Amino acid sequence: MSLYKFTANDLFVNQLKTNPSCRFDVYNSQVFYNNKSEQAGAFTSSVPGVPAGHVSLYELNVDRNPTDTGLVFPFMQRDSSLTTFKTLSTSDYYSLDYGDSVNAVSGAEYPLSASIVREFFDTGHFATMATSNESVIFQEYQRHNSVALSLDAALGTTTDGFPPYDDGDVHNDTIDGGTRTSLERYKRLKTLLTSSHINALKNTINHYSAMSPHFSYSASFASGYSRDLDEVPVNLLSVPSIFYGSALEKGTISLKYYLTGTLIGEIKDENKNGELIQVGPEGSTGSGSVAGIALYKQGFIILTGSWDLQTTGPSAEAKLNYKNTGTAVTSSWLYFAVGANDGIPIDGEGADTRASASYVMSFSGTTEVPVMTMFAHAPKGQLNFSNNPTYLSYSATSADYEALTSSVSYREPELATVNIVSSSYDSPAASFAKETYISKIGLYDGNKNLIGLTTVAKPVKKQEDREFTFKLCLDI
Image 1 (cartoon, helix red, strand yellow):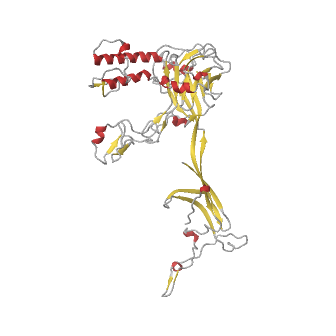
Image 2: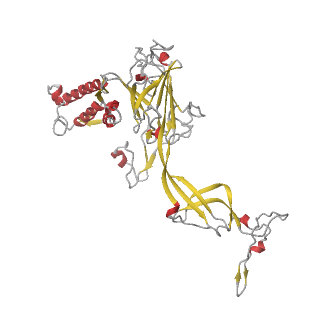
Image 3: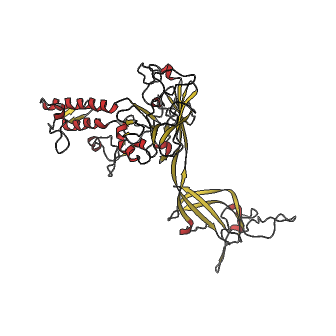
């Protein structure tokens, strides 16, 4: 076997940019990913172990019988590294002996899955949320201090940013369960003031305001239109990065809104600046208007277009119970993708009317794949002998393989090799010449351990006067 070392000019590392396409169809509170429906298996209702519209991270527990074999779950062993799951308490961890299995908490079994999620925030959502939580905080403060203070006084802060109390006692926490001191519980409640997912994106949205004024979280526009995302209704669509990679590809986002099979609205980011502009149907209400914004790197689509999409066509005047409250409203971009993992049940109130609406969201992602390119050389005059037994003449007998020994010499036999040189005449073979066929190329590490093997599509004939260079590509 011949070994050759790669030189600096034989190895190149670069990135391959890919743009995988994604499409989500939402109908009747169900999500379908890339036109894949749910497939029943022998042991589970879904072969991959996740519902339709989801992807499985490691593709484990595929059609696995949970009764006979159990489900694959994450675990590790306690060792000197002290590595463990964050869900395991310190006391429970130190109660284990070295070598014991450390299992994740129940419910953490594979598969891990992801899908798009819709969240709806109604008018004045942030103020309502803050007022409600401030009241809870105030009650908690009074419960542990037994003093008559106003709400403002109770929420006053000291140098550490929290009210000046901590009795040090441990209390049951009805918010998350478990126990906390009064100060710890107060800190937990305080975080609820900014628990709005829209408000959490405030700095990110404002960061992109240079791209378009529509990225201003709170602003007034030249047309007299003002908007504050803490006050106006907002429809938030979240796309996990497993679907798009590093960013949503600019200019590829398309959202289509159907009612009774008729397209009543379509928006695209045709300017590639994050503005989602209504482009169809042609001449429809809202055409040319910005219905929302897209955060390409973060994978969020924020829709604020509240105009009526049903002013014309066969679905005019038809109102649907989008909010699942018993009150029907007209269709707008605020209700796009209702039922996409937003907690609205498939058989909830008004589901029979919501079933007439369907939605399609499509986009391309951006993924950079590191690629190593290697050039393997087969020089002239080399690699013309094979260790394959078929390289020797089949007419040789066992006696031909025996070494000749005497008191003055030791001589190994010269074994006859097969002449595979083809002849253009009647003879089956021409004059003998060394020829081999290269079918595989192995990759070895510094200790000569085989770490990779590649096979060529068709064996390459190697003659002594020929040299070859094989190009190998490896995703890393």
